[in-house]
Length: 251
Image (tube, rainbow, N blue to C red; front, side, top):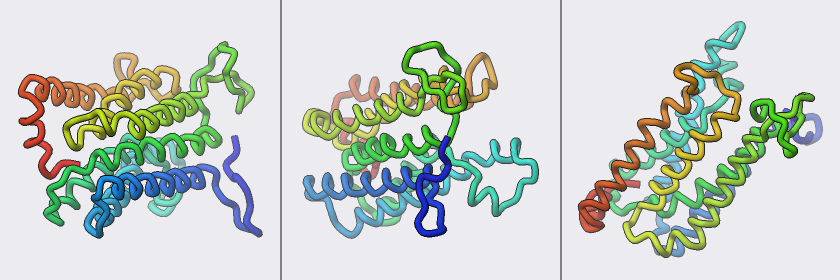
């Protein structure tokens, strides 16, 4: 594992933070380009982006509080804020909620999910490389593509996720945005696809099993996936016109 990617003079550049920030910058660039293409780029949309990023970052950190509190030998607020870890799922929930709240405050009624979707996928595809270089990547396995960061052959689960996110970005950017009819649905399609993928990849992630052979992320993903599936089923039953009305004010 490689916690420090490189040094700038005497200052270390953390590997994980470097790839996360690189992913954020790439995502913001895609967000701006897509917003410009859709004639949506204005000051209010940029404020919504900032609200989404801030809330996503805060909730991602807070979502890891339980894990930090159970494993840290001497917990402290400063250590938690600086090195307490983050939860990707928590970050997605926080970013979604941050966009919703900011839009309500600004009274912005236009759906924004189509702009966010490819940006989030690309940011995740890049950011997961930081996890790959700094964390144990998965469960032990005899597969020929296993990685040996600690001398034990393991599933490169973070690379699986990076490949999935890269494929989702390509689909969202080149095909989905011109074929999905309901404004805002691209993001929900992305969330549903990611929820199913993440549930499956959890079996080789190596996270703690807490109940019925499932991890905490899997237990969270079951109701989240069900809610998204119900949304798409009800939309199909009622028709796209009803869905358009439901999307007013949604990200």
